[in-house]
Image (cartoon, rainbow, N blue to C red; front, side):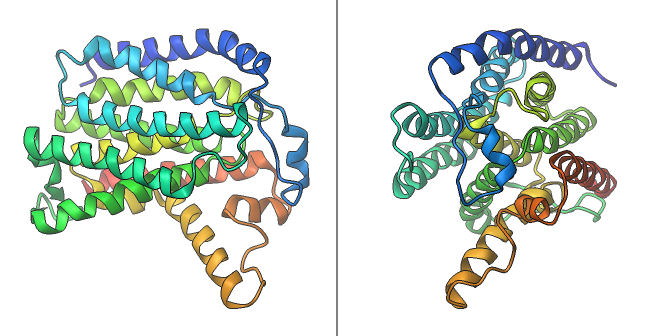
Amino acid sequence: MISIEVILALLIAFAISVLLSPFVIPFLRKLKIGNTEREEGVQSHLKKAGTPTMGGLIILISVLITSLLFVGRYPRIIPILFLTLGFGIIGFLDDYLKVVLRRSDGLMPKQKFLLQVVVTTVFVIYILVVDPDCLVMLLPFTQGMYFDCKWITVPLVYFVVLGTVNGVNFTDGLDGLATGVTTMVAVFFTVVAIGTHAGIEPITAAVTGALLGFLMFNSHPAKVFMGDTGSLALGGFVAGTAYVLQIPILIPVFGFIYMVEVLSVIIQVTYFKKTGGKRFFKMAPIHHHFELCGWSETQIVALFTVVTALLCLICLYGL
């Protein structure tokens, strides 16, 4: 049964997101915190140059304020909120360097990787000390069997968290794409949390509400982009919640779109190097490949969102 806290968390986060956007978006525009588009990229995207980015701040503020209202009664929110904010701050630093200080590459790859490892390490230490059950993985379609082997599951956290975070980051390339896909995942998490009495329902509902509010301004044609501030934060949320719910093994299923986006980039780069300049896809990440094949942004966003929703239903069946 859905508790009043879940409904309140969703509505509060939604309201904050909707009310905050008309103030934050003009502020970002005034600071000239605008998106830049590559000349060699999809030509239709050139008209998006100058659209305010770093809109992920709207999502982060909405989720943070809402979560703080419930964290006293729902302490299991803490590691998820930490991972969300931790990666959100890394994304903010990257965005700030790129769009405010005009340092085209933002954080250097080594710097970004090191910061991500540090945040993940704090997360691992916290759950080992406070809630070690988070490292026990539920095996789907087994009617309640679990896998618990710390010398495998602890190192695996780094692979899962970093892979998920960067998968969500690559997915953020079309108006409403990362927002729509992650909304479906957040709804799935909320249903699972309610059904298992996991004690994290307010934050999953808050993310759902914040994303729905943000989608009103991020859907095509987008008035604001979330930037790395939002996409890395959402990646942290997805990975952290999967661990608290003990279902990281299901990430390749409900997070299939994230995984495909990452793999398309890896395949493209590897193929390009091995063949001396040939491309496996017309462009990577794969959503750009579909664009160059003639698909519209709205078609791609709808397809990827629907696929995620269907895969979430399969995951529910597996649980």
